[in-house]
Length: 363
Image 1 (cartoon, rainbow, N blue to C red):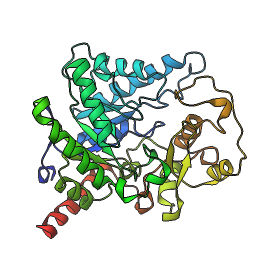
Image 2: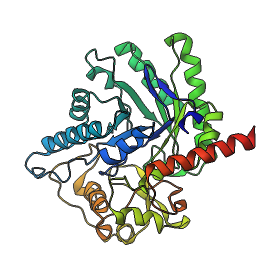
Image 3: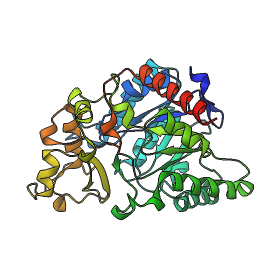
Image 4: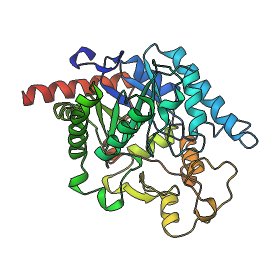
C-alpha cells in the first residue's frame, strides 16, 4: 500500500514512504525501531543522546562508550534492513563532533541535527557527497541562517529541512509562552519555511524538501501537511507504542495510561522547555525534592550539574529501562491518544488507510 504516497526524494536518495521516524533518546529509538520503519519504506532514525548509557566502560571512558554504542546500533540496523537509515545528533551534545564523525565512518544515509544550529555540520563530510544532511529547525529564520552559512562556508545546502513545531515531545525550540500561541503553530511554521526556501531557490539553484514534525498523529494529519506543501512528515510519538520500539514495556504503558492533562511542559536542566508525561518524579522536581548532583560525563553542553535538580540523562535512561519512579517519559502532545501496542507494519497500514480516507473525503 506504500504506493499510495508519493516517495520522499532527498537528492538521489528515495524513501517510498514519506514518513521519517523521529529520533528519540535516551535509547528509545535504536536499531530495532529504526530498521522496522525502514523495512516499511520509511526512514528509520537512531537517536544518539545517551546511546552509551549502559556500556560497561561508561564511567571510565565516556566518549568511547557513546561511539561504541552508536557503531553497534548502526551496524545492527544495517543487518536488519536495506532501507533508509538516519541518526539524530543534537548540536547541544558535548560529543556532537565525535558522533557525527562516527556516523559518517559507518556510512549512515542521513544525519538529522537540531537542538541548536548545526552550522559546521557539512565540514565533517570531507568531500563525502553520499551522506545527506538534514537540520531540524523551529523557524524560517533558523532555516535561512543555516542555508546561507552552509553556502558561504561549504558551498552546500541542506538536503532536507525538518520543521518541528511546539506539539512535539521532548525538548522544544520555543519559549513557554510560544508553545500554545497560534502564531507558532506547525502550519504557520511550515508555510514560513516553505516561503523562505522558495525565495532562496533562484540563488541556490535547487529546491530543498521540507518535512513537517511535531504533533502529527494520523494519516489525516499526514494528508494535511502534504497538502500544505511539505514533502513528508516526521513522527515520533506514534512509534513508541509499537512492538519494535526499543523502550521497555513500562515506558510504553506510560503512554497508554496517560490522559490529556498528563502531558505537561517541564523545565529541563539543559535550559529548554520539554514535554513529558506527568508522574511522581516530575511532581517531586516541582516541589523541590530533587537536589543538585555531581556528573561524571557532562553529556549536554548547556547542563550545569551543580545547579541542576536532577540528571536528565539518568532520568531518561531509567525510564527506558522501565524504572519510572526514578525517571519520566518524554512524549508529544497527542501521546494520550494511543490505544494499544502494535507492530510497525500495522501502524503504517493504519496510517495509510487514514490517509486514503482523508484524500477521498477532501477530494
